Image (cartoon, rainbow over all chains, first blue to last red; front, top):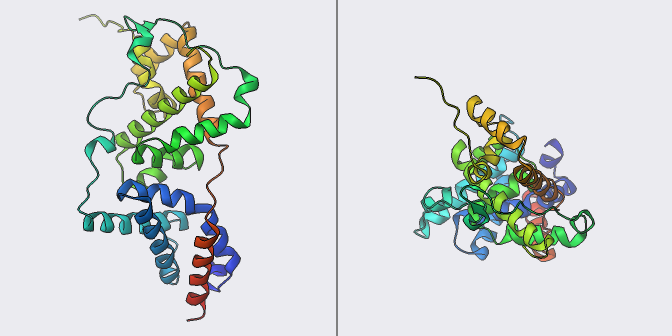
Length: 191
Length: 83
């Protein structure tokens, strides 16, 4: 923090590298296009620089940065006349974790097949996961990115995204279920 | 009324996996979850695969910034610092 205030460019660069991708994913939860999300993130960094002298360290730097982002993104979304639909918050229609036709009267019709270890540990597997996360609805993508890719706690994610405990969990559940499904499709030949 | 233990099905269990891993299940429901999964190979495999999914997601590296966008930000930083 002191280094940042003193103008240490490398510290700023590091911060940008660490959070840029995640900030972008979170911004995309609120606004309609990637281009607008990029602008919001850019504005956020400028606001961080302009506010750093006033940052009192009552919250972590990370929390503070993401709060600035959420505020900017929401303002922008309002201007676009856009609100986050309930379905994006994990309400609305249920999305089963596993296709209903995999069950017979509630029990596995056939057990999920084991995943071949050699294939699982290949580089291609990470690309499959990345692709599956990228194709999730924006709110699910933001939650799984923060929780599982970045390793944030549930509480940090709830604060950054202003979600209730239940919404955070439902979104995480849907996201993880779909990524597991994508892995299964890739790993199991006849899935 | 005598207490009846309501068993959960596999289809119900897969919907409880995240709550289970998050420690968000009430004690009775957690007990039912564990009672189901202990003898059920299919659900044990499923839970294991969800754990693997989480672990592998953690190996992804965050996206790098486009060089042009990074240069623009660093330019902004220098302006800010020299104001």
